[in-house]
Image (cartoon, rainbow over all chains, first blue to last red; front, side, top):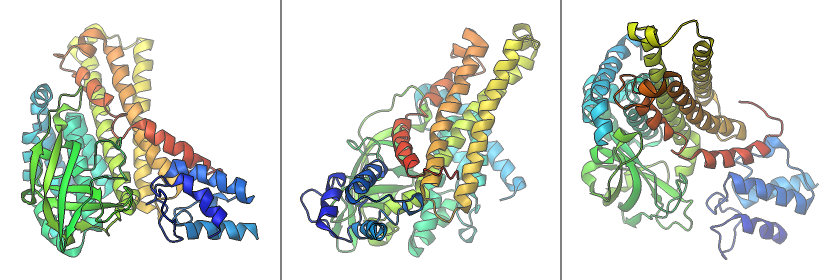
Length: 77
Length: 385
């Protein structure tokens, strides 16, 4: 995962604390809920200049940092 | 489950619940008599699979039964629906040993299951727990305080949420089964609410130990269980209990208007009366339609975690809560001070009004509306489920 991406993620993961956010840590376990997910989505779209379509806004996409980052990368290319 | 098998147990339980509703409400005590009726009639085993001797009930059966119980006593309906939620969850996600140990007893009416998901300081959040399970080898030690456990003092078993062993965040939650004889119960306070008084939802502490195989789903797997089944079934069951309570009150009012005494008070050609009756009936029909539609979506959707399905399930909860309470309020207004407001009226609207006031607060509507606002932004195409 891109370090900038991890920096964008961190404020929305209230249970992550100062710990490393690994690519396969479950974002829900780290405190992401539906309200934070929409805020995170906006932050990602602003930072990386992408627009994630509705059909990608699934639990699978938001499962881990890796799954979310892969969607961002795919949309950036 | 066919209607012919179902009619007896439900009618009998409703009759018992109705007979004791005044005293359980007045004393804020658990409806022991109705629970005994549910045990003896087999109603308690409705959601246990047929392979264990249960009623093999569907969500539709759960809804139909709960609505009828709600007409007699909303607290009894909620107790029943929550028990069914625990049974259905255990049947779907429990391991083989747990299922074969618990479900035959449920089917025989020997097991009433209560839910321990509330926790001080987390504001009713279902999906987090700050009470860790302590793992010692194959044994999981439980020490759990909960501010509200419906029927806890009368339960034969519990489904308990706790932070998984070694959890690094409160969102890593286990769902555990504990039989009554595996825990000691300490009642930490009393229960003196405005309504839903017979749910006897006491604060309590459970201390004990259970073997590893009593974890339901995987360690840390409660979120998936909740999103995929437990929460939708909970909302459906509560909505049915509320709808039953409102429909029962409406039925009593209609009966009164058509009675000899009622005819002296109400003029059937009054346009105000007729339009108010129509409005109340329409609210009931709207909630009922939403409830049945949600059941059909939950029973058929491949994936319940999509925003459109979550929006629907949450909207069922909020709309049933406000819609059913609105009906109770309309009926109080329609019947006036004597029959709408006084405790002794045989229409018992005062109790229904108090009971249904709790609906928006149970798993608070405000929280669900916040979640739904966010989810709505993820479904710009508005793909209605």
